[in-house]
Length: 469
Picture 1 (cartoon, rainbow, N blue to C red):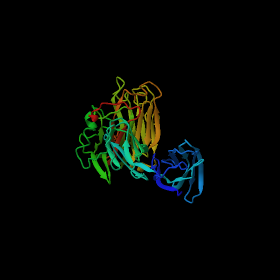
Picture 2 (picture 1 turned 60 degrees about the vertical axis):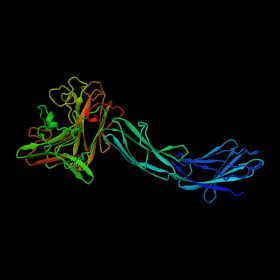
Picture 3 (picture 1 turned 90 degrees about the vertical axis):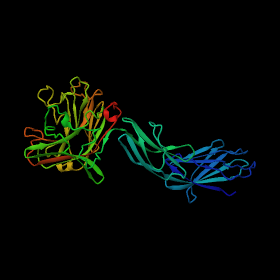
């Protein structure tokens, strides 16, 4: 009897299922028919299953695997009652024939032949940005079976919109850990994950898209540090201006950014900055800044991206440095190096504290990428703050660690009872400031920040700060 041939394409990477029903034929006691063939593939593995016919004398089924030249490359026999066979390690990108033949007394060697192409599914997220409490996702898929439905899923959201096309925007909650999965189902109900995107939802995001504005940054996120100096003065804040005249919102290509300027003309210095104090603060998480720097003078330049305590676990912790300070990045003078620094009661150089005089190079380390000119290019400066320590990164590379190796808050005030807010500023040094040095007339410098991003980690403590209201 002429063999029945069924051609199917099964995609590796999904639990694709296809049922093959031969045309009805008259049944006789001497004949048998494979009434159903299921073919699924995953990672180069083909699984065949079938239903045995009720035929007297059927002892089993023989399966031969051949290539397109009809060369037999695998063969096996299974006894009647066994209704599945697995063939693994089949090279992808090739087509194989699977011939099923019954054997036993009184049965004819009818065959059902299936041709399968072992190929690789291509499914990946092309974008997975979580910004301002929404997740913008898009994806691409290739080599799916016709009729296969792709669905976006996550275990944290029960009312996801129905997946239409290849993109979706989903509302997310602050601090949650989301895993978005694409599943593919060809109608058999055996859907399988084909791509995964994981990201912590944002605690905070700003990409400064107020191009051309003279009104300052988003007032729901930022304020001018000038209003909160409380009579203090140092190299970072002594020349801060009261308005936003030293802050610009610019655009280069598709990149929007905020520019913090510092200058000195005719003996008068001007500096700039923003803070998220009383707007946004967090406890444990990862903060990232994409920034670049430029100055025209060997000294006086003092740019910083840093964190200060909004809430302290110590009775006197809001007074510097008892509550701690985390400097994600400091850049002073015309220097090829940036500093990554912590300040605590025990690591301050201030003479009125009895602790070790550690300021920059013991508990504050420096990182270099070459000459100072390299800082004129965009770089990502980051700190991950966990319950067990602080971890600094430069362009994704881990550069230093400050471990929580003791319980004394004088050494480590960065506990679950504290919360920190963000400061970004361009300071201008005075003649009395040995650290950045004094800026002379004609001094100019700026720091550009493309974005600020804060994401949660496993230790994050939810905070009911005004930004989320």
